[in-house]
Length: 204
Image (cartoon, rainbow, N blue to C red; front, side, top):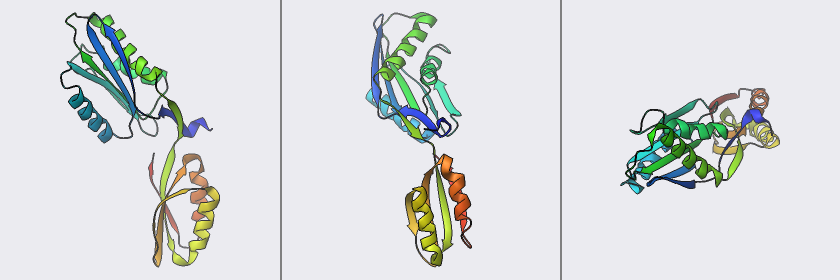
């Protein structure tokens, strides 16, 4: 597969646990695709582990892996979110959120102890995860006159796109999903159809 339009992510949720001097660190790793999903998952985990002392996390998503954040949630700066994020980077993952929930055991671990605990908990969650490779896809829309329906469908079938919605009238439109490395080819071919317009809507 072309590495330029693929990325590594998690197939489903996975968990890991690490204990140190009475403190318990529960790591939850799961796939996410938007900041809205991140916020909803954080709310859910805080409800589930409502009696914990900290809910630290890190995430990365987006077409170019440029959307990321890590949070220490009250732990000393740099001791929680950053080591969690380090595990995302070292496994070259994208569209992933890792939350580490801490139950304080009464003994302070110090800066190096905290860094090790959060890093190890995140590592444990990823060690049992099923990592998969997915393609980066574009969502496009073509608008065209009904008389050219057969021409449009012939191209869409040849390049094997996934049609997501259709509107057939005198002026028709089809929204479709296609692997990014084939986008230029299909747009070029579709634009040759008389009076057709093609628009790139978003990249996933």
